[in-house]
Length: 276
Image (tube, rainbow, N blue to C red; front, side):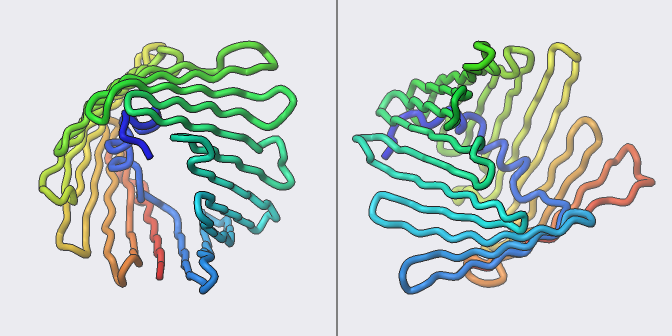
């Protein structure tokens, strides 16, 4: 649908995903199955410390509509309906949660060759409203987002960002937290398949004079196995190994250690996702 600059949330996303995605210190198991009628059924079990949780979700696609329903062990039912091309170059996403109706919201996304605009509102009497706009092209884009509380009539957030993307690299700068913080990131792919990469991120919070530098990398051992690692200036070291045991079925083993307090035990996580 979109040949333009992408969403504001996409600014810095590739670097952010490499530094955060799949890192896990819990135990998680999920299995997905496809039915003949086109439904995708996924069951997930999570152990976080001494807490156990589970959920069952189903997904169904019909023409330009996608339906997602998730039920967890606390009897919460989350439904998300995504409709593409409801109007030309427009996508609508509605989400509802039972019994917490106040968490329901509606999002509308509009895509243009040189701009992307989104509007999100909570479905309640005095909603929170989020607006984002991105201008540019797939190579370079400028964006801004703002959140407005209609109850207090005040802005809850406003952020600004710029992104430059090339086939083998991408860089971004985000001015966030109401201009109280700045984050700059750079990602460089090391091979044509983009399965190996190096990334660096610098974060500064002006009000607390806090500075955090994080470096990380991804290395493809072979076509089935990859390794990721990251280290920040606070001494937190994380690493993970992913292996495709079956087509689309991946096992992930990850761990984290604080190099400044080596007397503490490192934390480890295990994730297994089986898909048809």
